[in-house]
Length: 119
Image (tube, one colour):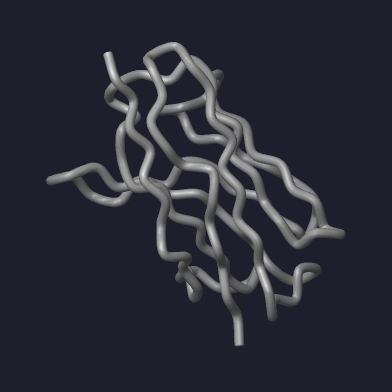
């Protein structure tokens, strides 16, 4: 059974940084893709960044590109989201997700970690 456990959220002042971690268990990394999403109150869940263990590629989407980066440690089965220059509008619950590389839908989700950015 696959489990994803996020950590690293918290309260930070605008302009600060946080590093989120997502530890995966029960996942076949070599055939998996992992990602970070966020959801702010009253808004839809937003895809932020993707790490494809299948080919090692990473992708950061436009809304946070230049401020957020994604990387991973295969030995620890962990994906990280480094968030710099945080803004109050980055306040949200951040979720880790995983799927088989060939699938469209995200099969597995973590419980989420709250990030609050104060102005």
